Amino acid sequence: MNFDNTINTSTSIISYALCNMERKAVYPGSFDPITNGHVDIIERGLKIFDRIIVAVLENPKKQPLFSTKERVRMIHDIFSDQKRIEVQSFDGLLVDFVRENNATIVIRGLRAISDFEYEFQMTLMNRKLNPDIETLFMMPNISYSFLSSNLVKEVSMLGGRLTDLVPAEVEKKLKKSIQRTHL
Image 1 (cartoon, rainbow, N blue to C red):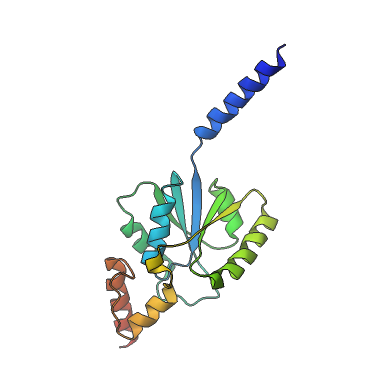
Image 2 (image 1 turned 90 degrees about the vertical axis):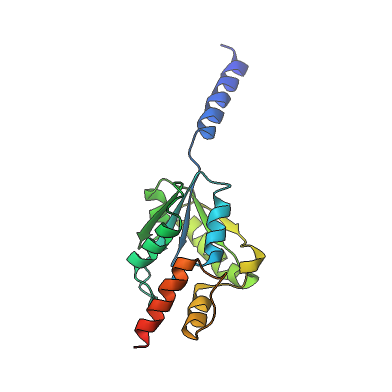
């Protein structure tokens, strides 16, 4: 038996399998609402991954402006022409959701150094819970580095202009939602 040939054949099979595996990532968040910063991360993530699952968190600690179903629908509508993006809601541990969806990568956006400490802690906890899951940190376009869902909601409540901060569909829904809460 030629040992060198066996190694080359095995390496070729593994390389072939890796090249033909779908590269799938999960991008979790509350997305209340989704902003252009989130959209930027998703679109740029598609340059790296074959499929991105946008995972909308049902977080009992937060009181969202939009229901989980509304947030999922908004994101689905924004990316309706993009077949490589899937939108799902989840509750519970992120590592469980990632495993259930046969992914191994989590995408997280970092706007500023202030985001890093929290994200670092979450990444280490996720790694402790499932060492097979890796986290990819992505910085948004500099135009969105200041942007957060909370800031968008505050600007909307105070009657500010949201153009270039959120997709047009989201801006309309924000205005309607703010009007409902002020009636």
